Each structure stands twice: as structure tokens, then as C-alpha cells.
Length: 407
Image 1: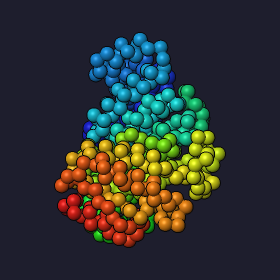
Image 2 (image 1 turned 135 degrees about the vertical axis):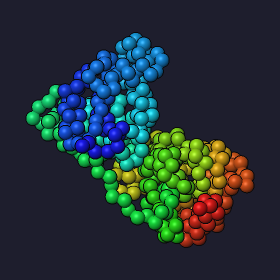
Image 3 (image 1 turned 120 degrees about the vertical axis):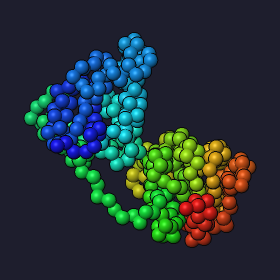
Image 4 (image 1 turned 180 degrees about the vertical axis):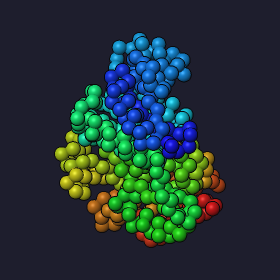
């Protein structure tokens, strides 16, 4: 008997006009393992009637899509449009999908992975791709997508592809058929916290004070970390956020490599979750090795954190812009908001005597926030006369959170 509820299935996804043999092979192996599977054809062009969900069926749900695909000679545009169609389908059917596996090269990977990202964290997701051995950040994003290198191109079946695709099929079948053992979390509600190396002492103290009451999920503020924390908030996994480390916004505005994008702080706006934030590591912008620092920044205050990471101190002007950007987001939040200002420094290296200590730059950030945030009974800006990694500041974060979380 096949495993799982009668209406659940593993989605096997790809372009049947070019990869049908490989896709059918994967589906057959999943079914042979006792797991239901459906073949989803996402071909922008032709449609395969042997698929369980044909490309024509997907397109028919959207007025004008077929005509737009037929009229565009540009493959990139067609892939992007089909990706939107598939992502919407995956989101609407996510409750029935027990796992998803996709096959393809760069085009199919770009088409399929956004749809994978519509599924909740914990739903097995495997992308077998010719580009999986390179930089896959753009495909994975904040999602638990497993990228598996195909070794050979996915063009028919051969002795190598049968092994690679067979292993992938059995991986997703096994994950879909066997639930992860439950762990006793003492029914603690989960909260999201953002941390960077230079704010670790602060967040460690917060976690130690709250872990008996909350499951503390700490996210490394590397761009993807902030996106992931907010994705979990949007999905309802969190009851609140202690966003002590908003450094990704500095990378967004100054062109660093750890930006979380324009939607940073979007989740507390959409969800109205209790939100406690701060200015953690807004003294820095992140680049790779020194040779990767843009030429326009070469005369700035730079600090080699390690051979792969170079930090650039933000200026008073940049901090003014950061304050405006953050204030605009805070002003859109309808839930309980507390944003704490660490007057004595925003990171472990932005303290008196530290390499990034710059009272003028910090003051520009703090004063802009004070002048721009529309404070109300629910939205408060709180100055704390301590550095972010001082024990007193961690206590202030905890007190502010407990005041508003009401659990």
C-alpha cells in the first residue's frame, strides 16, 4: 500500500518537452518505493499529455499566458513567465505536496526553485541540476532546498544519470514517506532572533534568558539568514521577533554582499507580530576579500575580518539613510514595536577604543530614527545608555519583548 494520506503526492517537476524520459524514470522509482507521485510539466512551449498535470493545464488557469508565451521569442522571458505560473500552482497545492523534486539545467532550475520556495519549511525539496556544483544562493534563497549535481546533463538516460536520478528519487521518496521524529519542545512557542559575530554576546544573553519559555531560533544575518527568519514569520512559525542585528540593511543600501533585499522588515509589517529591533552591526558593510571591495570604496575605513571578509565602516551620511529606511519600515508596522538604540555602540568593534568607533556616525543614525519614527503607544523608540553587547542592553531587549509578546 502506498504511504501517506490518499490525496498527498510527491511532485516531479520539469519540462517534459525535453526531459520526459528522465522525469518519468524518477516518478516510476518514487511510485515503486510506495509513495504517490505526480509528474508536473512546466514546459513553456509544448505540452505533454502523459504528464499528470500538463503544461497546458497550468497555463489554462491564467488568462493570456498561453498567448504571451506563444508570442515571445525570448527564452528567458518565457521561463520567467512559466515560473510565475508554476509558483502560484505550488502555493495553491502546497497542502497536498508531500515532497518535490525537479530536474534540469540553469533554465529549469531558475523556473522550478521559486515554486519549491512556496512550500513550507520541512517539506522535502530536491533540485537535481547541472549548476548545483556552483554558487546556488540565487536558487536556494531562504528555503530548505537540497541541490544535487547531476554530473552529466539531463538529456535522456545513461549509466551515470540513472544512478544520480535514482538516488535523488529514493531520497525524496524516503523523506516523504517517513516523518521526522517529534522532539519534545515542552510546547514552547518559537521566536526569531538575528545575530552576527559582532553581536553574539548580546544575542547569547537574550537566548539564555528566554530559552526556558521560548524556542529561540537564531539566524545569522548574512542576507539569507534575515530572509529565512522573515519567511518563517510569514508562515506562522514564530510568535515574535527580536531583531537585534539589522546589518543586512547596511549591505542593501551600500552594495554589500550580505543584503537580505528590499523586503527586510516586511514580515512584521504583514503579520503584525510583536517586534523588538535594534541597530546591531549597522556600523559595517560586508564585502569578500580585499580585492572584491569596489574601487569607489578603496579609500574608506576598511577592516580585514578574515581573508574572505572585509568590513567597511558606514559613514554619517550612510547612517542617516539607514535611519530613514528603517523608520519608514517601522512606521508601517501595526503590531507592537519596540526599537532599542544602543547609545554606546552598535557592535563589538563600535565601542570606545574599538576600530569602528565613530560617535558622529552613530549619532546620525540615532537622531534620524528619533526624528523620523512615528512613535505611538504601540510603536516606541527606546534609548539605552549601553553598548549592544553590554549585559544591560540584552536585559532591555528581553524586558521589551516580554512586555509586548503576551504569552
